[in-house]
Length: 91
Image 1: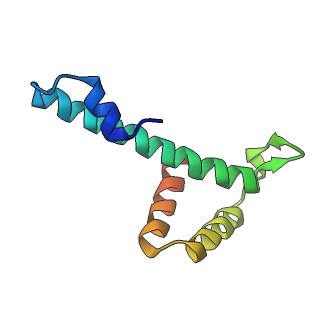
Image 2: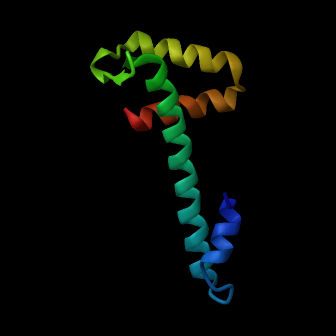
């Protein structure tokens, strides 16, 4: 998989700085969405799947709290803030 910078460089002409800037911004948004999706999949996989079926109706505030406490215990403070933002954006 190409890095964001490689995708942005390959997406347009270097002679148009505005186009290059737009490509980098678009790429950054894609990377953010992929990170949010990864966090959401981890959370839902741990707390909302019963017998292999996604059942989001079963989620509670306690599930969110438990997931975030676990994440905060294993990542840096900055990353923990990111996890909270990622879940907030998806809920």
